[in-house]
Amino acid sequence: MANAGIQLLGFTLAFLGFVGLIASTVMVEWKASSYAGDNIITAQALYEGLWKTCASQSTGQVQCKVYDSLLQLPGIVQGTRGLMLCAILMCIISIMLDMVGMRCTTCMAEQPVQKDKVALAGGVIFIIAGVLALVGTSWYGHRIAQDFYNPFTPTNSKYEFGSALFVGWGASALIIIGGSFLCCNCSSKGSGKTPRYPAPRSAGQPDKNFV
Image (cartoon, rainbow, N blue to C red; front, side, top):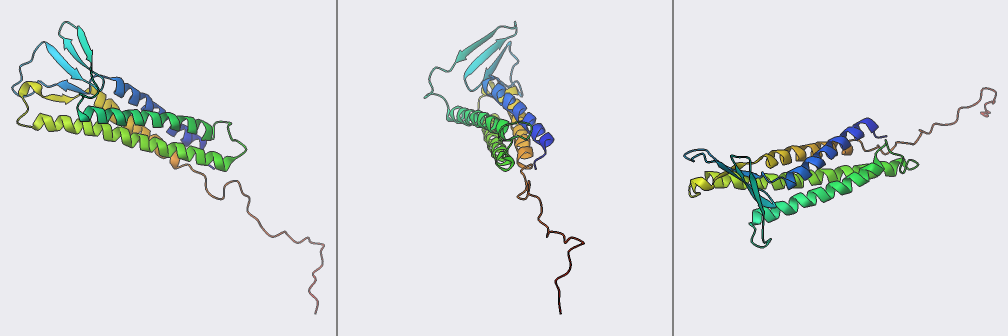
């Protein structure tokens, strides 16, 4: 039988990762303007995200602009959007499955084997969602690093990793770890079945071995 405590721990970690995944997706700081090298520090900081770009002034004023056209977006932004949204959708499906399949819930309590299978399926989907989010954030980060070290990139057009990437990496790790805990607690094949032994012979029953 699955351990309810470890199941609950795995679900909690995965749910926290799910919240972080949503936060990372909506954040605008996916990449921030770099002041490394010969860049002159200005009174304006530029940020780009999956949905809009923002400019922050030294006075504290922030101006943001939503991307006008989906078709004019770079392929890296469109691909990362799709991966992050797919990961969020799969996390929602996993949460619904695990709320039914975990041992601490009363759903399907009369069918423990099927209940464990539902929890296992939710854990597997959590892991897939975490991998998708990890691929999306790593792909975006690799492109930032590639452009940063490209000698043909103008100095004032270089960007560095934004805080949204670090949030996404942490959320992906939590989702994968939580899903692994849920998968490691699948019930064994013999759970719920009592071993069968031969019926004991009563003391008063005479032996039937005759010569």
